[in-house]
Image 1 (cartoon, rainbow, N blue to C red):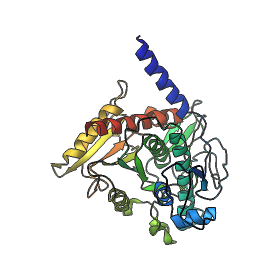
Image 2: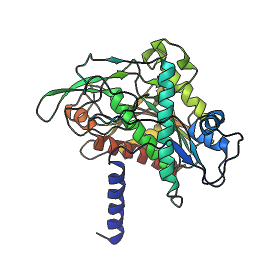
Image 3: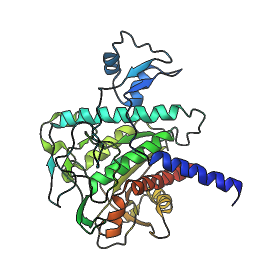
Image 4: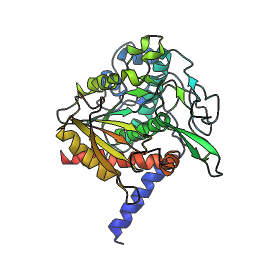
Length: 373
């Protein structure tokens, strides 16, 4: 093995160890850097200038390097085995059955505010780490990527039975695990310089690490669309569900309005329960009644190669999916990260180290596609 290869392996191990540790603590503050403006900071964290001024008791729009700004309310971390959580923990420690549900405890408007506060804190933590490596190249700078975590809200997606290490039944809820992968992708993309949006957000948790095989994420129906106006209604029908899928495209297209030409991507993440196909990931491009979207297909081909593993081959397929139609992204795909019909695939999904590796492969696909442009 050459010294260059040894160096690459060591760097790779360092990155994995860095990203697979305990959940990172949240920072609700941002340290102003040279060239920053209050407007730019507000846009970066998707919060209003008015709100930043209120939180920091600012009388003008002027900020100066070294100034520390609060970006949201103080959050208390609740540490549990299938967490952490930030506002309350689930009523049970693991998913009880295919039919078990924990309804939302608050109105959509409150869940939206909580979710936005969490996302701002997450962003502040990511960007503070990115700022410490100012000399590091940002290969995705100038790119806008929208991540669509599949299902959520009143639609949990697939819920399958699995076994823990002692052959006891446990249950895996698709939307809970897909959202965790989405956040890991979000973090890696931000660290690489991309502007990133989410169509669906959670009001109670960020990245979650779980260690024991018997501990699974609970079907909490509290997720909301990343849209303030939509969440003003008290009806649970405004939450993500099978009847309002096009809302995901509308949210994504708002991000793409300010994206650079040719530098916008959309990726919807799922983990389906499909008896009719092999285990492993599947990259899906837009094929409308035989009319193939070439950019979508190219993106899917690049992603398939990144997701491919000799033991678990990745597949590619064209389909006419609602979240891919009328999407203003330069290229858009849907990725089934696992097929939960396969017991081994469902088992792998339950462990945070595997979800992290999955996120890294997805980001590798995005980086590879961006390098082609």
